[in-house]
Amino acid sequence: MDVFRLAHPDDAAAITEFTRAAQAGLTTVPRNRERVDAYIEATQRFLAGEASANRLLFVVERDGVVMGISGIIPKLGVERPFYSFKRSRHARHSSQLGLRTEYETLQLTTDFDGWTELASIYLAPEARGQGVARLLSLGRLCFVEAHRALFDDRLMADIRGWVDEAGVSPFWEHVTSKFINTDFEIADRLSANDGRFIMELLPSLPILMNLLPDAARICAGRPHEISRGAMNLLMGAGFEETELCDIFDGGPAISCRADATLIARTVRGVESYRDGPQRLMAFSGAAADFRATLTSGDVAQGHVSEAAQALGDVRIALAQDRRNGQ
Image (cartoon, rainbow, N blue to C red):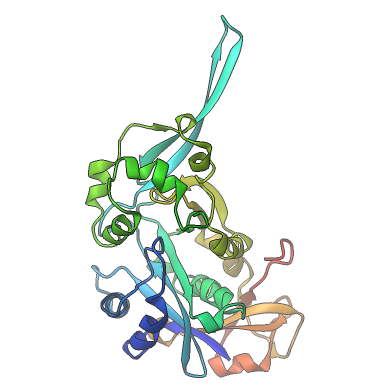
């Protein structure tokens, strides 16, 4: 059985083994042992109630093997402002000429400060296509539901932006790099630790998107192909598109209220341990003892597969919204 839980120090070597291959753009994925250790330490400090700690790292374990990671940043804007570009639409009309024009702008903003972020998912190569990503994603929503007082009522997720076949981000090339004159990888790495350069270098005035090449304009709010599945999964769990996008690669930001997620809307206790036709999340415990797994049952009847008994006194919720197939 695949089990979603918080990461602990014994997981660090296994996590580093597969995250070191993560590409630039996955800012919240720890790509070396030092950062993995720091994420796990921050997780332990957050659970201990330290005000300065602001990160949770989770794993999915299968038969003692770590299959992937995901994370939560409980409150954005604590260490530094969380910057996004806000896309706005405008229209102008000339009564004299009978002409009308429409255009979009990008405006640097910190609208997400104070929100809770669902941070990047990253899988070990052997875990892909086996449902591990769904467990890593929805497990975070189960943890939020079980610990609502620890998180903001507003949840968001930054989705990786589109790049071409050569791995180049047109949005970075034609927009952000014009103000931050360095390589994408360098800016991405620096932003994970200290984002002061973003405020210092990016313009406070709106950027007119109609002056940009089409290749850049269509990338504002466009997800990377390998991240589209993760985005669709969260959209199926209650998230919606926003007008905000990533300042580096233009990736979309999506959001949902904590009480409107698929987990929050369908959670209930268990009446009996028997199988059923629905795909469910089963979860139990709190803090370091929290566990979750994907299973089957019938949420309306309170039925869940006998395998879920291994987690103890569980609650269940839908893991898939049949209305949209996600």
